[in-house]
Image 1 (cartoon, rainbow, N blue to C red):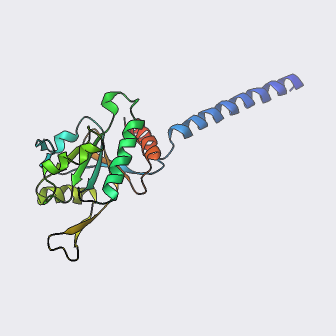
Image 2: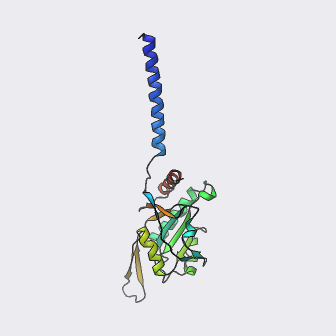
Image 3: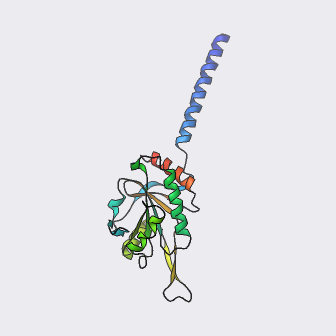
Length: 208
């Protein structure tokens, strides 16, 4: 083989290697794992449930179809975790404002304290963080059907020197429901708006 031929072969190999490197780099970028979210390999179907939103309207699985949803479980008497989480979700919504309307996720807070959280109480609480956020409550068996399916735990703890008072300890994760109404990912604490927003974009692209 002449020197020219050897150089030509080397050049071709170099070009192919560079092209392969670019391809691998692009694949790595598109296949980046979520930063914070636990992505379910197979989205989990949710059970039937019948709840009511803070407008007094039925909230059932049909309300989760056709769009992405961030779902959080909390209560209006929550002193810290719930308001902080709703505030963070408001920041996430702002960071996703460039998406087409149909791709922007809904935000739902399901109460784990239905004895105190009436639709009226939720209406005075949840929209404070964003007018588009929706609060949901209902009968305890219906709430438990949903929480058990999503792996949400909550317990009631009496408050000393207050016969009618109690605190609620609950799972603080944020749950992402896909447009088919299935649980797709779970965001554990601590919640960071930037990371949640980036993860949502990645998940949405991979689950189209």
